[in-house]
Amino acid sequence: MRAILAIDQGTTGTTVAVMNARGNLLGSVNYEFPQIYPKPGWVEHDPEAIWASVLKGIRAVLRKQLCKPADIACIGITNQRETALLWERRSGKALANAIVWQCRRTSAFCDSLKRKGLESMIRDRTGLVLDPYFSASKFRWLLDATEGARGRAKRGEVAAGTIDAFLLSRLSGGKVHATDVSNASRTSLMNLKTLDWDPELLKLFNVPRGILPAIVPSSGELGFTLGVKGLPDGIPISGIAGDQQSALFGQAGFERGAAKCTFGTGSFILMNTGHDRMHSDAGLLSTVAWQLPGQKAPVYALEGGAFVCGAAVQWLRDELGIIKRAQDIEALAERVPDAAGVEFVPALTGLGAPHWDPEARGVISGLTRGAGAAHLARATLEAMALQNVDILRAMERDLGRRMRELKVDGGAAANNLLMQLQANYLGRDIVRPKVIETTVTGACFLAGLGIGIWKDVDALAKVWRSETTFPSRMGPGPRRRRLEAWQVAINRTKSSV
Image (cartoon, rainbow, N blue to C red; front, side, top):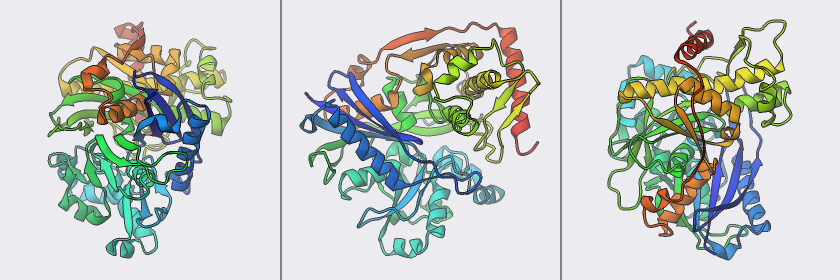
């Protein structure tokens, strides 16, 4: 058997999965790791905890005999994007905790650049808004706040990167320091036109070019395993993409105009715009979707994301204790026909697209004496869907056309009530695939394509299959009123109000 091993390194945990050469997922395991909150609005990860979760996942899939070590033809990586860290080149040891994409600690610095009128230039070159969400200001903060880091960087002792680069370094025994073009496009340091680190942006954010990884395509022989416990040396690492781009690839979103929404820690809508870099006038991002072997130009995408989606359900579970398991929210929410006027805007780490307000904070409103846990659970599911409406409408304004359908994936896509709410509020068909963990699928597809298991994307398109379509069951009038009420709730969270 030829097997593809996929590592999906996410914000709250790591999934390791195995796919065969026919495109069938044979199984997966997931291990969560601690979230670190040093101050309000700050989020960190221990890189060693991340690496331990990867090794634990690899051991588990081998122990479950999903494949044998000798069967592994290649490895694909997909990862939480924008999360930034520094490590020693020689030992591979992290110099400090990673700063997670959700972290807002660099808001003041980003605001200072805005006051200098630099946001337009940054956006023109990177396709990204000026926000602490992205990696550049995180690298700067780490270099300044980690004792001796800048001096060591000048001496060539420090490597920097996003999580994909860290994992590629660890898997290759420190031999490879590289990042794929999709992850590089999320740093605010890569020029979308040249697909290289931009000298002026490096100077602006005070990030030395020498600490950054090489930028490589998303598929091909990118490195080989060396010294990884449980794995043979020499397995090609042949696919890398940021989690949202990987999900679009795993949804077979190969054609211009294809779109997907991933329900994970956050929720993210991506639309394939082909080889055209599209500028957004509606608060969306232009990003690289992927670059395949032999392609001179990458495939680009429009993107909009809400920072907190599934994380809101985890908050109900972990902080409020109204559910014991994340999947319990559907049954609890179904106890009531609606939220009875309760609104929950989960701006727990600020507002993302299209609002981009890092200082916004979550709000629960509309409470009455009769409001209970079921109403809050339903309001949470409604918020997860309504955030995506804001993004989709902005996307349609940019494109100047109406979307036909939206493919969905991620753990919360299994929630039928949430999917029906999403269809109702969007007024579009929601299409759920047979395999909802399409970030894993995308990593496997990219890796398999990279070593020739599949010839091209046309062969991959035949592997993808849908499971369920959710049509909208809400009329235009009720939908309009619901969206108006949501905008009132959104305005309550904004820092300027």
